[in-house]
Length: 513
Ligand SMILES: Cc1cc2nc3c(=O)[nH]c(=O)nc-3n(C[C@H](O)[C@H](O)[C@H](O)COP(=O)(O)O)c2cc1C
Image (cartoon, rainbow, N blue to C red; front, side, top):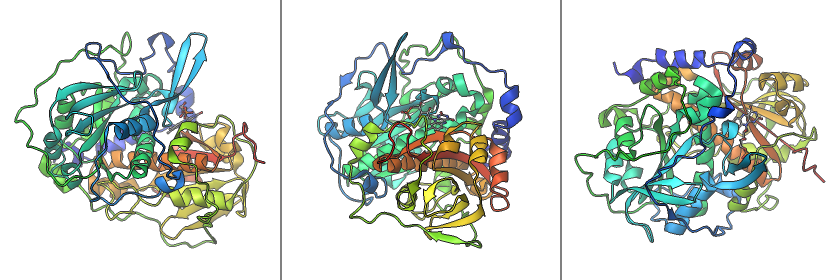
């Protein structure tokens, strides 16, 4: 039995990293500001190739870009400007804030603690104005550092067990996650954050790819050691977490060299000292795939999870018509996105909520979601203030476009408590909790299914952020008391695990009207 099939590992990690009322109060952890990790990975010996800074307008409405994808076999290849656009709008620095000790950089996608543990690497054949190579994206300089020259896409093709999207992609972006950068604050729970923070970034990346006419596909199945070796990352610190293919060309990449040589490139230490959380490394090992054959067997055939047909009262979604849909382009919406720091207790409309739910859940092109449109996470809502929808707890039937009422009532206090006793989910118009039945998911995908379910939640959460900002509403991701969330939505949610939380509503800064 491979580690991936030993399902006790995922359950042990999940249970050990749950938040509860008691765990929060008994955890002696504090933020050691003197040992705060650097927000960027720096290769001091390599020069950065500058990327074009101008954001080329796509004109594609954000609400379309998040909901649609370009058919997989449409021939398209990004040029250097498109590469710059993809990187800037998914992981670039979009806002700077001065504080007495210096300047703080906010990035295009929401990220827990603004710690930005996700790094991006490009593996490409020759593109217009960009030579074939393996590159690291440096957001601070907005440039690329070339780690390897030449076409190494064949190595990714092998590592993904011949994934067709990788075979035909002129460009593939590998997302890695760095343990210490996030664990400095969140300790061992960081492994969940990898999926969340990688996911919000991918929501942006997928939407921009669509706006640029590029087919894109998220690939979660790959031989971990091979991909880490290609990027030359130290897997005790930084690990490949997801892969995204961009574009489609008919020609296959050349075969990869038999040996991928180590680069031994110097990088600047993130902190004076790093604290190791072995639980995360153990979880990573237990979710790793070891051979191309294992990857091939892993891919697709998503298990049936889903929710039973509605038994309670139903409200049909009423999304805005195309004529009334805000048409702000994706690049504008991403650049104005932020996390709402305080919500106004003012209502949103059922049309606004419906539009967010509908547009965010039209499907993610991913190797673990087959057939397309399948979803691992179920969305449960606490509605506080939505015109046309009585306050209460609901479950969303995404295949039917319906909200089923589980219980009526004013649950602002409950939502605030469940969201780790914060005001945001109590003040918002609606708090959306993602729950998943991990049992069939782990049964089918092994422990790797845990990565997939967290990643999917981050992608859907990121799309909800964009759908909110496209309508000039606010959003914030949140963390939560795991078992209390399940309890709140039970009986319906019995046996499921809490995965993600996002609050949506009007920001107190920008009152409607
Ligand atoms: C998954 C997730 C969970 C988050 N949890 C919280 C939270 O519990 N409390 C909070 O105030 N902000 C939370 N945030 C918001 C982040 O702090 C915010 O994204 C980060 O500071 C970057 O700022 P920006 O989103 O405005 O760009 C969360 C964000 C994400 C993506």
